[in-house]
Image 1 (cartoon, rainbow, N blue to C red):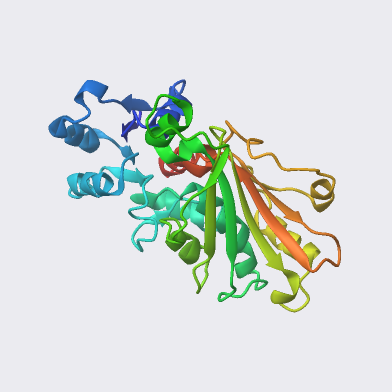
Image 2 (cartoon, rainbow, N blue to C red):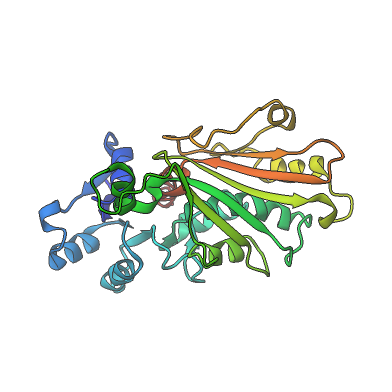
Length: 310
């Protein structure tokens, strides 16, 4: 019998992308609620409890409600794409390449919290350096990033694309999160193995999908003996043998004139770059990904496949 998958919130941006990735798959049975019935609480609860894996593409409060609806049914496993459970100790964090044991944790978990798009890039860059002892836990870290506007969901998509929208945004690029309080910071701190919260500056560009996350560092603030080469080696060793996360070779990175934010749009992979000359006092760590790929829907499908392989 094929495993049953229910995408709760399949008509939202993340849900639609998950569904498109699974449209041609014959190894699973997709349960679906018609859009006209998406506010039917009993139908939703029935489908949640009929699923082997429910993927929640909902706001935080609705995700918490869905988890409550299935709490007594141990046959249902959950992947949640909201921020509700990303730092919860009873939930597996759904970044399979985060460390060597993480894919096994996801495979055996009942509850998996899908990472945020920005944190996927930031944690992907920072955690290996923490584990290698190159970066101190109390480092004063800054994370600068730009995302495609689909990361803001249907409301932001409408604001960016519809010139008749009363809240239309004509800007080619804008900063937000100016209060310096952002929902992604707690998971960056905890899963980045940091004692201090990073200073996070997010922005949005006028492109639908794609993302660049940057973590600039002063080499003399790192562990003794650190260099551009040792930083790159730590990342390369951490992700050796991985197919989804690629650490670009130093010479290949040095030959680049630019990194295009849409370079991995439509893909579910992530590239990590280390920029800096030999002997340089600075190093710039860069993650390139699709905010709806490895940053959201692609990661959810990856986590689903791990859970189905248990």
